[in-house]
Amino acid sequence: MEEELMKDAKTILIVDDEQPIRDILVYNLSKEGYRTIEAGDGVTAVDIALEKKPDLILLDIMLPKMDGLSVCKRIKNSLNVPIIMLTAKDGEIDKILGLELGADDYITKPFSVRELVARVKANLRKVEVVSNNQTVEMKEDKKKESKIVVGDLELDLDKFEVKVRGEVIDLTLREFEVLKFLASQPEQVVTRETLLEKVWGYEYYGDIRTVDVTVRRIREKIEKDTSAPKILITKRGVGYYIASK
Amino acid sequence: MEEELMKDAKTILIVDDEQPIRDILVYNLSKEGYRTIEAGDGVTAVDIALEKKPDLILLDIMLPKMDGLSVCKRIKNSLNVPIIMLTAKDGEIDKILGLELGADDYITKPFSVRELVARVKANLRKVEVVSNNQTVEMKEDKKKESKIVVGDLELDLDKFEVKVRGEVIDLTLREFEVLKFLASQPEQVVTRETLLEKVWGYEYYGDIRTVDVTVRRIREKIEKDTSAPKILITKRGVGYYIASK
DNA sequence: TTTTATAGTTATATTTATATCACACATTTA
DNA sequence: TAAATGTGTGATATAAATATAACTATAAAA
Image 1 (spheres, protein in one colour):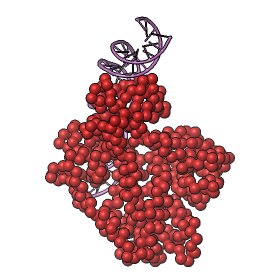
Image 2 (cartoon, helix red, strand yellow; image 1 turned 30 degrees about the vertical axis):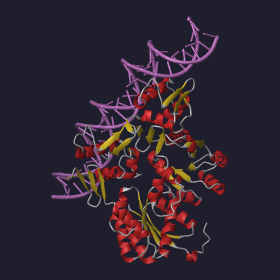
Image 3 (cartoon, chains in turn brown, purple, yellow, blue; image 1 turned 120 degrees about the horizontal axis):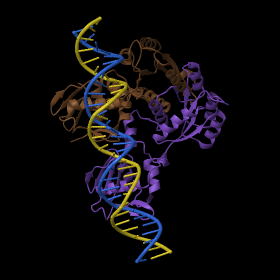
């Protein structure tokens, strides 16, 4: 329990369409001594943000009326307030960091309350210390890696383009994301469960075979001989990995 | 993936009055390497929680003797343990009430096992991320024990790969797990029974000779001369061990 | 709207891993 | 020494994991 008086309390705007999630956040942030306000959709979020000028915004990506990305852009346009994005899968991080929306941080669901609170504190601290170069540094960090090259494989993360042996091939978004996740850690075997969670999102309850089928479609496009894959390899009993040579 | 050694296993207390639900949870969480304990009513739940001090509690709202909300309050009063509430209705009142009592998270029935496990993991992630860079934490976590080197033997736990005298050899998952178990404690003789329990699993009732056969297959792949093993040694009358040089 | 592309599901085929058995062989001990 | 016990081995049946094809649903585009 923080013993701060309410009058100096920082105000946090929580934007999520699910009431229970908002409840969790409200409860825990209040407990930490923050004042909270809520919005359940994008349009309301923008309105409230501009009117109340909160000290920090927690913003879910999936929102009715106006999606989180647009909301973020819109708010950042008028206000200099730290925004932490909430996302269900890793793939969405690109959108946040890549599209110049100005989000300051992101956190993937399901998050622990502890972690979230820690992030909130960290981001509020940064505002206080105006000349802190941490934010800048982080963005550059992420941006650096706009290309992944592994063996014959070349992923351009900005253009969502894949080259195999120099030749451009056409992958669907889902296929691209799977390949990217695997290629970002070559030789590391990744289970189907992990792929489902990181690419499809933890809220996805589909069949695990879905991964196999997607892998097969990728192979049809990147492998010379689908029946003897040289790039995207099966580790039987475990999962898949990208061979680095 | 799920073959974590029991000694560092986190303990999860499952509180639900329906045996089948508990069974599902026990089964799946065990598979993920967690130790589980159970309670079927509120009073027992509090007792067990205070006595065993679990690392996390899954708590149904509807319970005999003492309802989940009171249980939550009671436990939170004495222990700082993450509690995930399970609720059957989406009546928000329940959830809100639950949250005011200090629950850290909630999940509505019917829930997918995948989601539940994800939540459990998230809530167990105790590492406070003070900095805003998630990757740092993750990497350190993974890198901790991703390799085992004993004598001429080198196991890469990420790649599920084994090298003998620098050369990569191909083991099946079962073979890899046996070798990993033995190599993680070189010179320590391990009985067949222990191997069956730790590698094959607690509920496995197969022939003990199965171990011998698996050992033999490993030897065929890692030993120069199968009839005079130098790495994976038999301790007659006891079991097997890995020679450290 | 219709058409097209993409993604997900299901059932079945195929491949590979694994368990088990029966017996050979080795070692210990009575 | 013979008997008893413990271990190694090859063959094979079974089980499990994975690949694949065909189909359905959904979303995006025309």
